[in-house]
Structure formats: structure tokens, C-alpha cells
Image 1 (cartoon, rainbow, N blue to C red):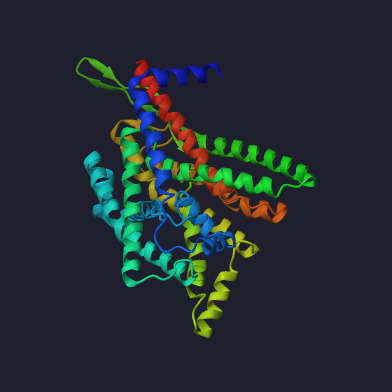
Image 2: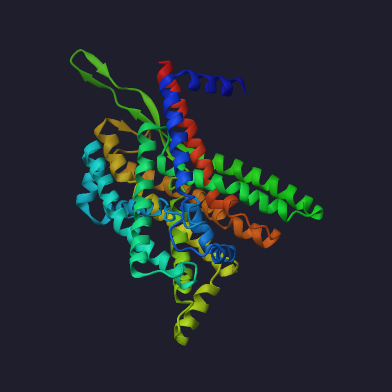
Length: 423
């Protein structure tokens, strides 16, 4: 505890660190102010009724940073930017030119790759904005809109999404931590007071044991998230000795850390996107005058989060996407080649192909644990809802994983800044 207060004191007394922290706080305040500015033409009573009965939009609200709950100008959040980044990473597998830019051209290549992601964000935001606004208009939440109003709303929400992307990048550059992650984190934390007040409003004395069990389970889950997020499998690496002139170099030993949760929260986002898509189509067709389309809409909407089939498919998709995304982002062959070029080897394993196969084998085994863990975290809110009847989206598995991961990353970044200034 003493060490914690010493760090707080050091952050506040160091001018550079204090400026970074204050910039992050200022940016988050701006973000929350933007989330309170609604777009024109909203029927507030109809919106509240719709959100209360629709868990699909409750989950979308997490990734919009809370901006969807009142249809603010940033209702899309950083979702389009996250989607474009994921698409660009997947394209590195299919497009060799993009793979060269991302992996071989260094910092300049990364900047070019990031610029492509920004440009892709604009059409994705336009598509998502149009679809979302069309659904809301079909539900009579947006009323009395002219063609000009519709076009204006699309331009507003696209501009809001681009503004958030820019704000996130400013936080990453002038603040501490990953800006986009901090914006999502702020949106989730901002929902906690309303979630807690809702639980207190429906509180019953007979439910005290249930709430105690809920609190203990929450603490255990948080501890599990921290342990698995920080868990690594070290692979020993030895550098061969090299003689240059009259001096000998190398000969040291280190280790290669392979994370158990290599994919982070991305598999959950992928799985959610696939599972929520049928519900989005169903909501879009709900007010159709065609009987066949209405029947299709009822079938799609019935595939809700309360069904056992949904939970099973959710777990399986998260499990599969964990392996898929790990394979996309982690290249054992490139790693083995780099080790060989630098005169490094894994003791007992031949350099080259054998090293690549060994790393793939170890990665496959530890990813199994990470995939099962992510699948459990994903379906945890569904299990809690079925057992207790408590619905708390902001306290759910995905939100919890994001919050813990962001806090751990932020602590590491602050420690790194403090260590750098001590040196």
C-alpha cells in the first residue's frame, strides 16, 4: 500500500507524467460530454422502452462507450475503427503486399497500415450508421424524419465515430495507455452506477445470500481474469557465442514468453458479431408488411440470448475464433527464422523448421486453456442470468475482461514511465 501511494506521489510531482494523466482525464471528460449530446428526432419514451427489452442493443452499447443508450452523436463509438483494424489484420494473410507492409517495413510500414485502417473506418461507419438508424426508425424511435434529416443523422454519427477514433489516437500519443481501449473502458465504467442503482432498486432482503454469492463469484472471476491474462509459458532461448576480431559476443540465455490468452478479447467480439447479426436482421424486418418476412423476423429474433442453443454456439465460436486469431497474429515460422538469424536457438531443438514446429506445438497447447477460459467468460453472464435472474451487462464477461485488461495494461504503462524517469 505504501508503494502505491509513493507511485501516486511520484506521478503528481513529475511534470511530464502529470501532464499525461491530466490529458487522459480531460479526453475522457470530453468523451462523456459527447455521449450526452443526442441526434435529432428521438422519441425518448419509445427509446427507453426499446432498450429495456432488447439485450442486443445493450451489448452494442458496451462497444459504443455508452453512447447508444441515449442515441448520442457518438452512438457508433469506436466499433467501426475496431472492425476496420480486425479486417486489415485478416487481410495480411490473404494479401502478401499488406503482410510485407505490416511485418517487414518497420515503423513506416506500421504508419501506412494504420492509415489504411483509418480510411476503411469511414465506409464501415457509414454502413453501420445507416443500418442502425434504419432499425431505430422502423421501431418508431426516430420519428417525423425527412430525407434531409436521415442524411444529416448518418453524417453526424459517422463524424462522431471518426472524432472518437481521433480522440483515442490523441490519448495514445499524448496520454498513457491505449486510447481506444480507454474509451471503451470509460463507457463501461460509466454504466456501473445505473447498473448498481437498478440492483438496489429491486433489492429484497431475502436475496442477501444471493448477492453475497454474486459478490464472491465476481471477485473470483476477476482474480481468474488477472491470472490468465498475465499467465505466460516461457520457452528458454540461448544465444550462440560469436567471435569478431579479438572479442567474443553472445552466449547469453533468455526466454521467449508465450501468453496463455494470446488473442485477448478479439474472439469474443468476432463471435458476438456473428451471433448478433441474425437479431439485427430480425429487428430490421420486424415491421415488414410481408407475411413471409415477418415469419423470418420472428425466427431470427427468437434466437435470443436466453436460449441454450445461443450459449452453446457462443462458447464454440469463441473457442474456434481464439485458435483462428492466434494463428493470424502469431507466426511461428517468422519467429523461428528471426531466432536463427540472430544466432539463437531453443536448447534441445534444431534451428529452423524444428523450432517452428516446437513453438507451434507449445502454442497450440496453451491456447487450449486460453480458448476454454474465454469461452467460459463469454457465457458467464448467461449462466448467472439463468441461475439468479440478475442481468448486469456492464458486469458481464466481455465487459469484465475489457476492464481488467485495460487496468493491467495501464498499470504496466505507468510503471514503465516511472522506471524510465528513475533511470
